[in-house]
Length: 328
Image (cartoon, rainbow, N blue to C red):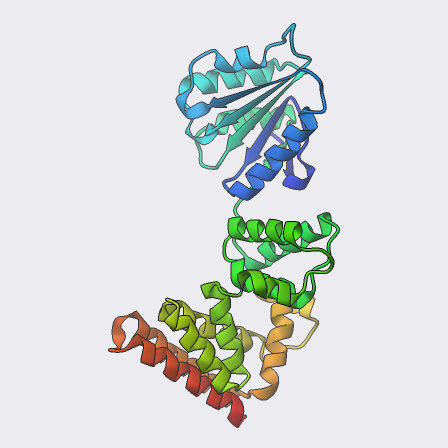
């Protein structure tokens, strides 16, 4: 009979005789492990053991998980299962066939084929796998952020969530740390001003502020923001990239009808990105957007070695994009 894989989200992680945390997204791995450990600690006399499957001594797992006269519950956390050796595989396979029901064995497997026989045996036995795969899309990371605020019973305004994603959304670890800081340091609804106070100085956030001002036709503001960013050490390459992303998002949304949620799913974007692009497009037409995208292509080449002066190239881009917005 084929093995049945039982994948659950980290928010539903709970103790079981064997639990696999499957994937390499460190934030999700930690959160899943924390939930299991917290649940296990409710039992008095918990005995916890940490093992490393990549540097394993034969017999260590069955010894750590064996029934004990001194502990009512055992927790064994095993790191690096994806790099395990034959001794660990042999012991783990034997243990899955004869578990201690008073123990919880957490196996952390980051991915790859090593240990696939063990995972198949665990699936066949019906033990859960916790999904901790990397979040590759911004929409997934935004959904994670929104859910974290909901779990904390806090409200974050849509513009504030957009600003947070602009500043930290490229990396889940940084995003999670930013969420935790906002939750700890603030009270009440989280506003765009709060997010800007904490993270507005980041290169990513600065780049998007420059892009927002340029696309809105506010040339003086865009150039002031740009020059401040350059003076404080920002590189022209990510600044051009921010303008490029803004214009390409507008181009993807242009001419499409339907609700923001529907379009977001089709375009693999977040709903707030669709709404923002639609607002930006009110002062643009096809010709202006095409010209601006050509300017982006020229600037991108110039700041990546094709021009003599990267600073001049990004200033020229901002000026010309702002001019296109004002003309149309």
